[in-house]
Image (tube, rainbow, N blue to C red; front, side, top):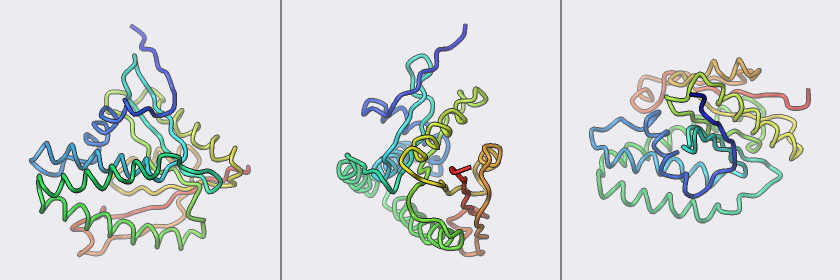
Length: 211
């Protein structure tokens, strides 16, 4: 039976399903499943708070992939609401597993520091960014990631962006971006101390939208 795939902007009712996609991909480091759920939810809330564009892929009505992007020339109307949700979830994370939460916050601090360094090395501006791309394991290989990425690129181009960039690392499927035509613009190799928190290598990729 052929599944029906629909693409549309993110809706509040998608939140739990999309958070589970993020959990399966990146948030299973502790044995505490309740904490892992919260960590994934905080990740999604943060990404929504900084993004001006969203597109969700639904397979037979079930959210199975998402892309978020941020344009220099647009605003995120629900930024404050999502930011407050993120802070509320972090408070719950501390209650459920304080040590894991502190580790997570240390990771975020280190990641932001490295990403800022990568951005400076690349020469790109801070906006016009793909802020999140995730596809459920069960939906990979169907071309959904490519459709989502192209939608974000088209959106950014429509706002006047001449390029886009994104951050990824050696623990992710970074070759996907090279197949979409992106070029690696900066690389950070983690020190021995950083490896306690970060991936072995972190990358900034860019794509020329004016070509």
